[in-house]
Length: 287
Image 1 (cartoon, helix red, strand yellow):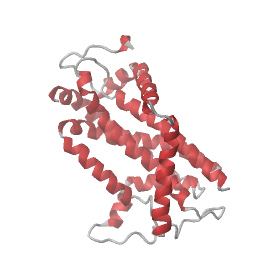
Image 2: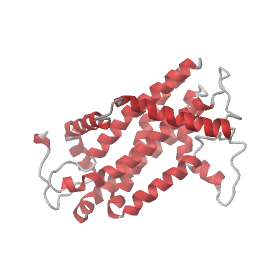
Image 3: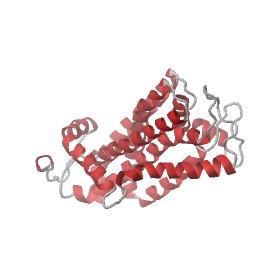
């Protein structure tokens, strides 16, 4: 890796377009960091990569018991072609994409803060580690998607529409990467950004129809917050609904939905990339 890591020169600036070319030239560095993170993730663990299976299964069991059984969330599930009424699978089909958003945006945001000091001594493109982190998360999400597939097969309800989950995961990765880039520089300058974002993520989990059934004809009632409007405008609602459409409901996601999801993700990545590379060097020097 010594041939692609250079000493950082003071005052060095790169534009958004130049940053794309430069980051692409550091593809070996990104690949090395991705593999390194994956190898170190469960280092000194007896179960190793088994944790990547146990963690989502444990969360699934807890949410299914609490929200599905105790709170009656398994009522009014949408129609499944095979007559399946399984709240756990209904929950898991949404949790796969939301977990990627949660981890992808957080790790993209935090990766820049974690490498500010290092970049004062060694040069590499500021977004390269964020790309490596999201790439590693795609491995975890792939494992979860494979588990979801196995569970649907065991339940006797599977369709070719399940394949749509692959491009949907890719689009979600772009979406979360864009959000993380927009937050990365403010997070370095103000620690409150990171703390506030964790609160927002917890709120989004409950404001997105993951553990509850969303019915367009009977949307949630408004209390002291305009819940109906928040849920309808929440882009994550579209993501989790599309995931359930492809897996649980076994339907094809409409072209309009694909256009909406892809459009939002591309716009966020472009905006995040431009904003990040205009501010990253100043933030690093001022940190």
